[in-house]
Image 1 (cartoon, rainbow, N blue to C red):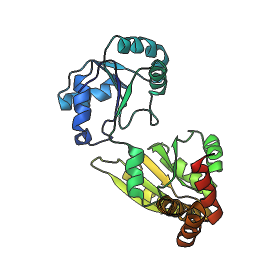
Image 2 (cartoon, rainbow, N blue to C red):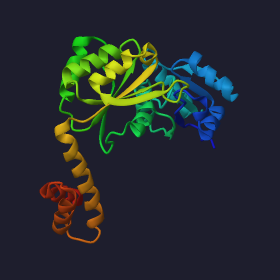
Image 3 (cartoon, one colour):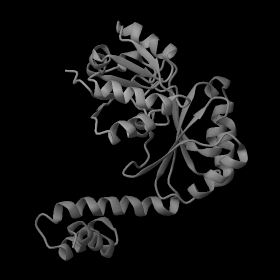
Image 4 (cartoon, rainbow, N blue to C red):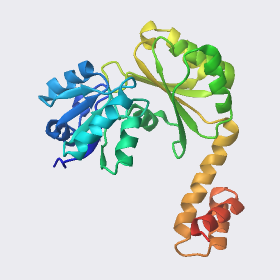
Length: 282
């Protein structure tokens, strides 16, 4: 199952240890070395699964210096696995430098998919997900955070960020200041863990919900923020129009398909037609 000279990018649980897939467990048990963001945190999971593979730390402070020797190990036939503290590596976690350099060296990189707080939150938010924008962590300082939020005021898609317990109230305050009190926000707290909670409310009501119980401000947070109201219906219409176009183009010329798709979805006929021509190429 384990291929020599391969780097495996392995998703690990974001809370519930039972979420580690059998394939992920087999890979972690079979590689020569596990690269972990923090070996102390990851050792808990390894002990739980009975995995005794050697581990080494790979984080933001040593990734550039460590990449070269790790590539040499891969070239010599070792199989390596990269994990983060929780979830899918490289999603607001270290690993980009290593993966890029391994690929530049012509060596194979294999994804072992699994838990991701980003995808888990979007799947239960009840907000449009045909398009979304992932921000990661917003800046820690209020002035920088508000500056980062300003371009998102009119974002035409759902956007997502992570936040910590000691900044969640300040973050929501700045989101309300920049986006307004009625913008709908989905908050997921402690996903997959014992005290998981999630709620979707206008931002002003969400801040009051947090204040009603101090426990609600503890843990790790994912925020999904609704698209700007002026754009959300248009986006849904366009997404439906494109879906219909893909089906209709199997039987009809682009012009007729665009006309029918526009009538059925409300999306702009010209945009659907232009998209079809662009897809066909020169």
